[in-house]
Length: 127
Image 1: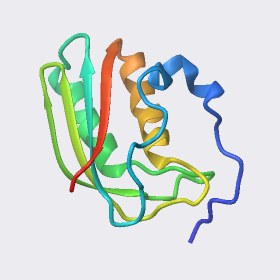
Image 2: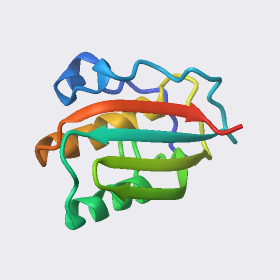
Image 3: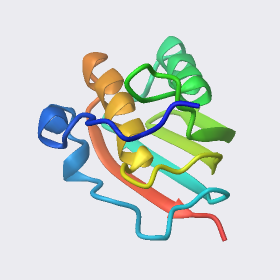
Image 4: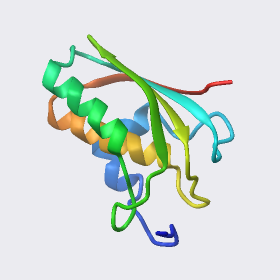
């Protein structure tokens, strides 16, 4: 199993995605077994192809030096108009990194490249 004892990207390296403006860290204790939601509001509606890409990214997202660490399982998702709603189950939690932030960096990079400006991000634990 891939370990997380390596140096990964820093917040500074991902400032351009705009994620740091809306998300710093979870407002709950994030551990293995945590169910949480991410809601992202974009400035303009996502088209069908990009909606499918967001869903695919959320389903198959991995991270790490060799991109073999799968932190979350996508439980449900909805992409409609300007709203992206994702519900995840944490299946592996790093002691060193905030995987939610890393996922948001990747998703934010995709949205930025496709010219979807992010207006808001909410991350909440499902109780």
